[in-house]
Length: 244
Image 1 (cartoon, helix red, strand yellow):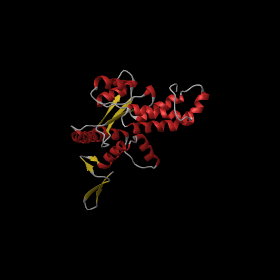
Image 2 (image 1 turned 90 degrees about the vertical axis):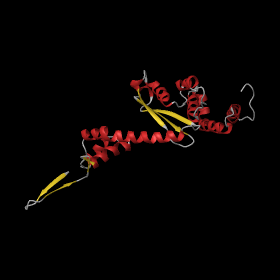
Image 3 (image 1 turned 180 degrees about the vertical axis):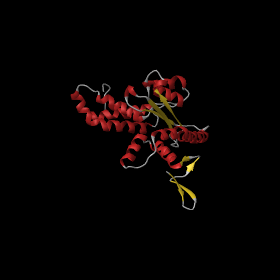
Image 4 (image 1 turned 135 degrees about the vertical axis):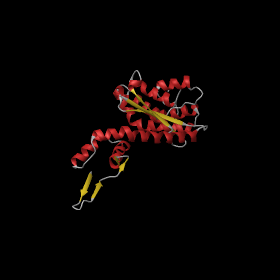
């Protein structure tokens, strides 16, 4: 809001409800930026303001500020921050964990964000955003995101890419995904009567795979031996025969 005053003696002055930054209201700019950084949407906040009878910026101004100022500024700062992180990690042996997340489950996803993190420091060196139009199908977005970021994940296509294009790197699977896969296979057991007998063991089985990974410490034989010991508990036996 801008108000101009003119007194009876001819003196003029003005008042503005918010300061200007390059002739743009600073408050509006901060609102547009806050909406982006908070993960909220303009429509929801605009509706919130409408219910309160609170004056709010319009959609045209919001998207203009977002496109011309907020997003470019955020992108520049992120790029600068990423360059510093990559410089700090350059030349070091890294343990990278990568994963992709789509905006919706199944084959209807439009976007996929592939992110990877350095397990030793907890920093995120980079991420990539892939749109379904960049691929032949939505189930390949994660592979494209991986190829841009070059990080391993327990995806069939990525596993193949690691074996062919990155054979010099040590590729390991995330235990969380392995645990999830085991749970999925158990729930698919038929007949249902057999599933009902095993179902109470699912939480313990999923926890056991984490325990096996920690105890094995990279020894595949020890991992298999510890994993198979679970059957002793389920069958209530002290030892397993070759037939088991």
